[in-house]
Amino acid sequence: MLHLASGMGRLGTESAFEVLARAKALEAQGKSIISLSIGQPDFQTPGHIVEAAIKALKDGHHGYTPANGIPQVREAVAADLHRRHGVTVDPANVLIVPGGKVTMYFAIAMFGEPGAEIIYPNPGFPIYESAIKFTGATPVPLPLLEENGFGFKAEDVLSRITPKTRLIIINSPANPTGGICVKAEIDKLVAGLEKHPDVAIMSDEIYSEMLYDGNVHTSLLKYPQLADRLIVLDGWSKTYAMTGWRMGYSVWPKSLIEHATRLCINVHSCVNAAAQWAGIAALQGPRTEIDKMMKAFDERRKFVVAELNKLPGVSCITPLGAFYAFPNIKGTGFKSKALEVALLDEAGVASIAGTSFGSYGEGYLRISYANSIENIAEAMKRIGSFLAKRKAA
Image (cartoon, rainbow, N blue to C red):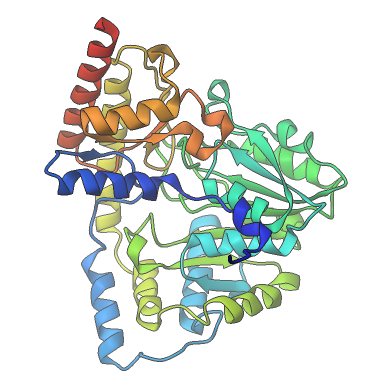
């Protein structure tokens, strides 16, 4: 019998991929499935980005690159951060990685160990809690509540800091809720953190360009007092419809960038060479397709919220970021996981149980509106029929 390391038993998963696999299996059996589950844009990567990758391959960019990324893409990231946030970032502190999960794992691995505590949003991206447990650290949930628009309150974060706290993870705009944290609360958080100079912060800003109703993202990069302990996670996957390209980046404090680069060398060597040139084209090229995508997401957002609020036993506040709705399903009488399974098996609609994102997600579903309005409308019709039948029964 093989003897696995104990940490493997603490490693969780991301349920969206499990639901996707089940949905694909049902489709293979001939069942009609509408997917409102997976968190990726349903748009193609803009053509000029694809062409940049093709050109890079034709130009001979086939080999290894520096572990931290080619200088040109790190410079392009720094320039883009200055354009969007008005901040000056040293390209030497930028790390190019194969997707956003790498940054969160590296950050958690640096600070997580038995006896340490890491604060993370709940409901939140499931890999936060999974990776924390894997390191042996204690995950400390930060509840994100519907009555607060699923945005965190600074005092809720600060009150959870103990002498064992090593890292705080925040995510705005947020997955799975679409909630955002307003600047006033971020200001309070930053001020409160002055009393805790030994606590690091990882700010997951992967949805930072996906906001609605005039809301503006407040990056923690704007707070120079955090510069020596702030890790920022961002990338290309969501904004540029590049999920399969596996292109992410992070900004690290000067004291940590060497450690992060060493992790890259140990784990993945470097990022795909041609993809890095595509990343440059994305940051420097036209935004016409991106603007069209965001306009479509905004229309879907308004539509899906209105339709969800028509369903029996369901209510949904309006998300202000990302491309997710997080409806309250407590009035249906279903637990989250039971409704996820029933909707897929009986109604042909793939969604994700709120509990897949943490214990505070009970009573909710995550609905991704990265699908056409026509498909969303049909999905809402199917859900409505299913709930009506169950209520009548």
